[in-house]
Image 1 (cartoon, rainbow, N blue to C red):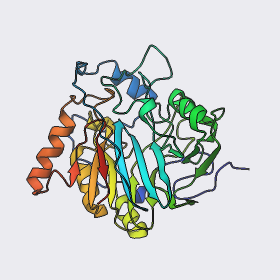
Image 2 (cartoon, rainbow, N blue to C red):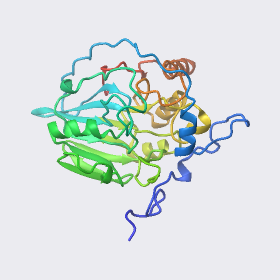
Image 3 (spheres, rainbow, N blue to C red):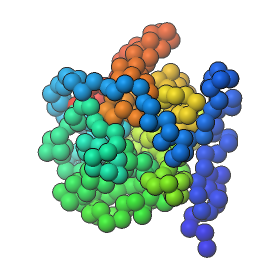
Length: 336
């Protein structure tokens, strides 16, 4: 018996990105730079020759205080990389607290002393983060599913953990109250919100032997008053149009803008800053926030490049910087 239901993104054993969601044609690249399918061999070969390292003396700032929230209102505090603290106001109770892809570790790696090391501290320290009700894990890559960080929050708070299909085995042994795995478009109600797993264009593996054996996704949160999309890790594609068609335009969308060079290797799994803006336009988002930049050097672009490209593209389109925010670590934003 096959472990997963067959679908447009699963053959029953492993997962793939549907052809209907992929860009066609992909980004234009010079013929001397043929597109490479990302895999352990190609990524390992390229990472041995990464461009000079990022700075390790980036100034930090004090985290912004958490705002008071009316029932159904949403705030999102940027911690680092793809980690946000999302708070949702509830009537007569403390706000619901949700973490996305939390990583507070020094490295995103299976090894303690080898692998990408953070260049800046988290925008919120562990003790500054309130009791967590839900953790959303978008996929199993080490910079998104960080077991040491998940274990710390599990032991302290015992939250519910929600992840895409196939990721239960990567979460085994962690002290969550419950683990729920969802296929794309499946929903879970956790009063006062409805959580929907949404498509992303990416891939998964934690070893050379489990390529695409676990699904990847983003998440849509609907409070009945406001909605938020956490896009997870994704390339640009036609899935944005389908998400808006099914779930409507979000009030706030958290979109990745980094880890895109070399484009020949990364364009099938990550977005450029310009593509992230185009995604926000396709979603008709009221506001967007950048993520997946400036914490771990995963690819070739410089530390300041994603933010610079984002601002230049917004200016070229005549868009205000307050519409698509490049957040500081610890900055708190509210869904309008």
